[in-house]
Amino acid sequence: MARAALITGGGSGIGAATARRLAADGWLVGLVGRRPEPLQAIAAETGGRAFPGDAADPALLAHAVQQLVAAAGGLHGLVCSAGAGNPGTAVEQTPAGWDEVLRVNLTAPFIAARAAVPELERTRGAIVIVASLAGLRAGPASVAYCSAKAGAVHLARCLAVDHGPAGVRANALCPGWVRTPMADDVLAGLAERTGGLDAAYTAATRLAPDRRPATADEAAAAIAFLLSDAAHGINGAAIPLDGGAHVVDAESAIFLPDAP
Image (tube, rainbow, N blue to C red; front, side):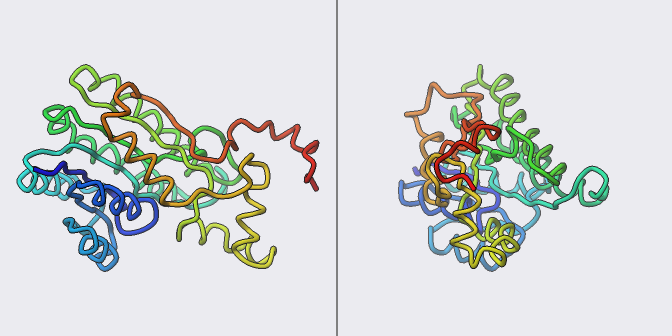
């Protein structure tokens, strides 16, 4: 029978691209997300199963795992791609905003892992948590998002330590700018000042060696690799997908040939 993977945030962006990539590779995909219409559209496109609802709902995640196991004979992969942000410093951020960002970016992967790990131990499967470059370094006015993504990185490490001996691999993918609807929304203000989204992405990635954002398909390819047997030796890693941005010393960037 087909391998099966559960993808949270599967209705758009990196989650949807991952669903398409895994389905093309022969996986049965189960998709969790809050918006039923795009979720069901991706499920129909990929031949997968849609489970609309909150990715941090333990009952929903347990149900999704159960249904995939029944359909495929096991669960072989978990991809936690649901994400949300709410800008602000520690003074500006509200407790409610903080709670929501942590719920989507950190609590939801924990709930998904809690539901999936027993089956992944049985199949010796793998977990990929889509964290962020913001989980490896701090950005301005992003106290909730950066803190949540740093927690997501360490959640993957803890899962690797605790469940690696039973055959489960868990890694965090840490994208920088990826051209998705969520990133488009984040860059909307910059786009107004620079003359459009293309210019905004160019400005946002001007310090990255690649000088461009990644695509959702590139992120999906990295996730597919991390789920595959070819990545068997990779466990507990935090892997940047940022065109090299994480290696750049921001203080020395003034010496770049195209620096302002």
